[in-house]
Image 1 (cartoon, rainbow, N blue to C red):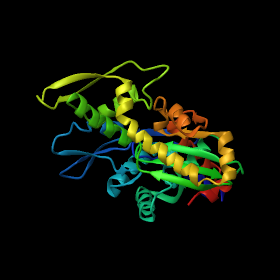
Image 2 (cartoon, rainbow, N blue to C red):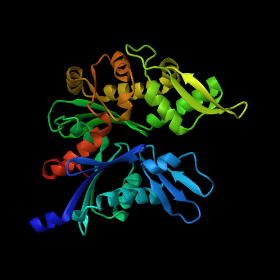
Image 3 (tube, rainbow, N blue to C red):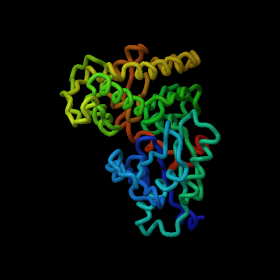
Length: 340
């Protein structure tokens, strides 16, 4: 038995719309954008991850960049398989991986369909996995931030990723009620793209919108510690000439306010569905924010004002889900009831 254990290598994967993270031996060994650059004529993969992101929106007609995941699920099966295979190959440079059986735990949105689950499993199988388990993102996030998911005390997790926002109330090792909406970081980027075009007559790309969100993104138009204005570059819609526009956090807060409001509504809906005894627990424990969206300035304060509950931003929220996936994998016997 020990011999077979020696031959099995365990990998935890957070297969995200924006970023894919891979954990091996309690370390995050891959943290790269979920994007692939391909040759249109031959179908050959040219670059994956950061290198492919540098090519995004800069390619000529022979190269296309593809984001294989949309709204938290696989949209392009073949490209997703190439991407997973590439990230696994990064690990296989280690001799310990030669001839090893791969056991994977992959996190998935709680609102995923059976067809979408099959797409994730098939992609992992074709990439070389022998054993594949799936875990819901809110449950993985809860494990990743140190919550005892088996406890009778209820906790609310709000995981805001690139494609989906996962909201779940967790108690006794299960999800009591949840909301999964396909509104998250990508939607905020689209809000910024639209705002820049309408307000400043400036055409910008996805990467620039993401940079604006990171540098001056805010859920509130009044911050105690506001970021400095940010200079965005793009093409003038009227003249076609490249130009520069300075944007402030206040105007970005107004641009993304409606989308933040939709996330708030989903949180309130989940709270409405929560049994009264668990509502009492959440009143005491508060709401836990994870995912890249948790880093948006003022989001915790705005959510707290709307729900009248304490809101806690997780430490290193970007890696909470992959940490939790790794914990479930490492303690398989204890947490196997969470895995599908």
